[in-house]
Image (cartoon, rainbow, N blue to C red):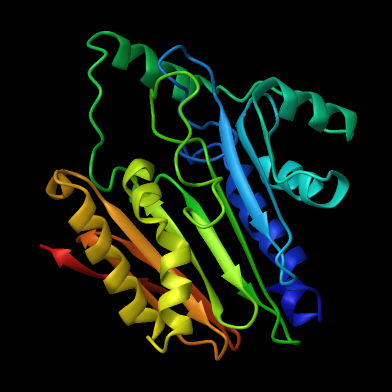
Length: 270
């Protein structure tokens, strides 16, 4: 908000915003301290999208604390949209990013405890979210979006969810608005969720109604929906917002006109 209030761009603001969470070692679902895969490797995913439709993404990126910034470099410095794994790391290092150990002692201990049973099952609303998605509108009315995560805890090596997928984990259209998703990525990908929310807004739905319809689509396509969580946030060109999820417990923050408000999203299932 400091960037936006000073007349900065939506793109700069959204990158800086999610970097705060990427640097927070206490958050075990994003950036430094993110929960590792089942082999103990912390792999990060992120995407960013500019008002002109440009976008960049990294998947399964190791050793770099701020994948969102690497995603922006992919967007601005390469002819590509997505770089993955070792290629993404090599590119990051070539751009001056430094290798770091992302596995904190806290996350390592939790992983070692998990290994005792190696039971894999997504837990609804664990830590509230497994993703940070952010949409910003600047003083020119331009819209940008970002999404960043360490993915599902103890996932199979190489697993990528919705977060770095443009149109699934996040999408913006400067004529309409933007949306971001959280929850089980496999379910969001099936519905191309964030793109769906934006297209519903294009066709006249409010941000709230669009999020509700997107959740309904996810539920329709995912038979085991009662045991997973998926939530969407959205904002339209007029600054109206919405949020909706499958289960209770999904919250999101709205900062507007100098006021920061955490909202409890409405939901499908108690």
